[in-house]
Length: 182
Image 1 (cartoon, rainbow, N blue to C red):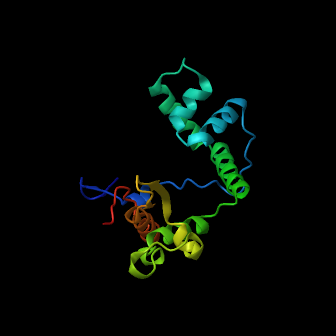
Image 2 (cartoon, one colour; image 1 turned 180 degrees about the vertical axis):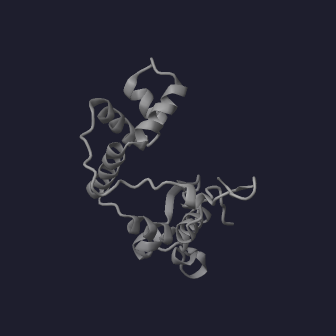
Image 3 (spheres, rainbow, N blue to C red; image 1 turned 30 degrees about the horizontal axis):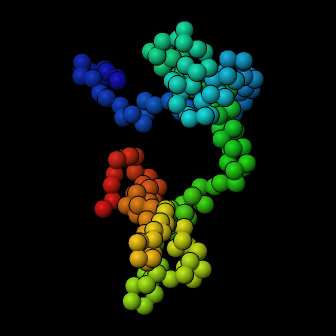
């Protein structure tokens, strides 16, 4: 906030002008991680919950409130942020998972069509005849036999609304997490 020289009125600056960038300066050499930082990093990468990672890394002697404060401080350190980024990238390479592959799977679920599973007269097609893309939208198949020997086949699908919501948030960049598409 700045004061106008001629009046005592306070002018508020927009947040974009007040916010400091979190990027590392280009010419700064980062130091290697300390032993405590390495322990925190190993625990943080398990579930990406900073407070729980701090509590696991440094034991029951630390209160929850202190862990919340100290884990936040650790996450602000350039060395720790760089190490987290490198480990996440290495993990993605090891798992051979990319954001594009995840988005393709979400799209297959979101745009799946029941007609791919049924032939004439709504009889279930043999599994080999169902397109691969359609089979990926199935979460569970249950086959039960009745007392008279007939088979009852139940097919459950992954929720389309959830997949559509995820895709919509990705495409729009919407920060709202509780958006539901119906």
